[in-house]
Length: 474
Image 1 (cartoon, rainbow, N blue to C red):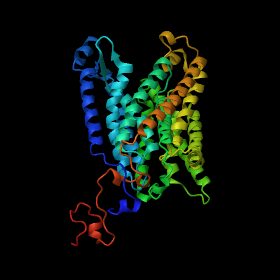
Image 2 (cartoon, one colour):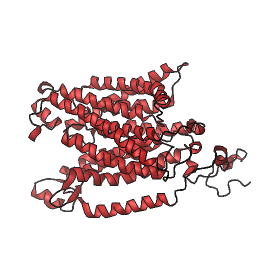
Image 3 (tube, helix red, strand yellow):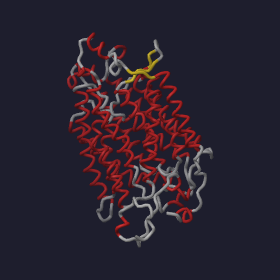
Image 4 (cartoon, rainbow, N blue to C red):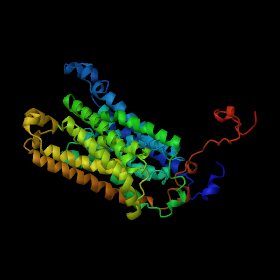
């Protein structure tokens, strides 16, 4: 470990002893102040719930906590364990993958509660934001956009830069979410448009601006080994198992959540078979590529997000998963190398193939399914419930609704590309402590690493890494 820097060349601008603590502490103090000014418990989490319950003839079972908390836990595991371990595939960047994921998600969820609260939950009479379990779920969703963007930048940026990415990412997310869900009145329960499409193109735009022409100097570290791929597969399995909760977490109680869970579950299963088939087909000896299995197997759930609670039918969900497994695997094999060679777009995790394109296609799929909706399929009450056809939207035709759904997808793409380009130029300022081209994808730039054990050590010391004097003879 000690001679790693000598092999790769000297580190450049990775001293963050001042900037990282300053950003973390100052921004955390700012969160404390802003929470003190704006954030309060909503009626279902406040101690006055007992009075409210008796006044309205309710029971504790009517508290939204009992409907949403199981889904929240699943989504929370996805954000911190699923996304985190999915990014541990680099052989020398596992600490950075899971550790920086932990950092930016922890900051992002706090900032998201404020940003989304100002747009969606602000009480104009009191000037307060009242939060409950659904707000917490939405905050996790908001963080997911920045974590997706992190995938394109993995191993190439400093933790200070990642905090900046999260600050702007959450802000842009809250604005585009407000435009899509409130002003355009789109439905997007699983976030194909709002989360995946935005997060994917946001990260790709930043990566394009931050293009490193000499990144090949870290080529020996820009890859995986047997154990790092195994750890990344843990992230895939957590995401795969809990994605039905992700897509159904904030859907309407009852049939909406039930249908979203079923559609996502089926699409995921279909994606696995097609991803395996295409991975084997594209290899000249028919072998499987772990990159495809880690990522393309999830693409069906990403594309199913917008239409998850719609009446797409179970065989329709199978078709979505089938097509997305093919498209995503094809992207990893052909599109990613083409983008790097032609457009100078360096996408570490391949978020273009797992989030950006499936999210975009999922948004347009939702537009088609919404436009085709009818009373025969949904019933009159079902249409009103699924598409919130109430108030000024009561007379909106389904063809018009489909048009607005498509427009929402375009808004998401625009916010991701334009916002990402602006943030990318901010991050090009040489003050953020990012590593040199020959020292990317290496934890040693920002982490204190344990001393590597020499190959000649006896077996009793090889597995006991808690011994203080590892290099000494027993």
